Amino acid sequence: FDLTKMPKINDILNWVNIIRMHDLDLPIVLIGTKRDLEEAIAVEDESAKSIKNAFNMIEFVKTSSKTGDNIGLVFDILVEELMKKRTY
Image 1 (spheres, rainbow, N blue to C red):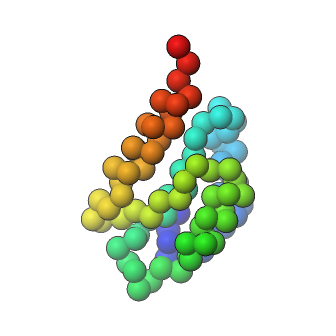
Image 2: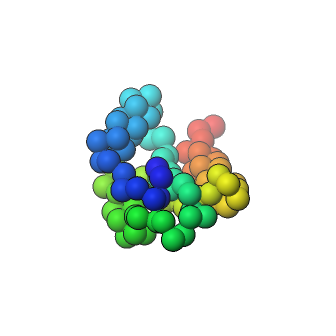
């Protein structure tokens, strides 16, 4: 979601439902974009963490598509979580 605007809970619920419809145990990371626009950020970390917890997501990460900041971190988190769930 865009950190410069408060996310609509219904939008997040729809995204989560689409993901969980396919796999209830799939790890979900809440990603806040536009981290580079520090002066325009409208969502407090605590609000985002509350959303993350309410929807049982594994992590909240602020990213920037413009600078690439934390993009790799999101993939690292997801790969680590998926490897934990891997069955042999």
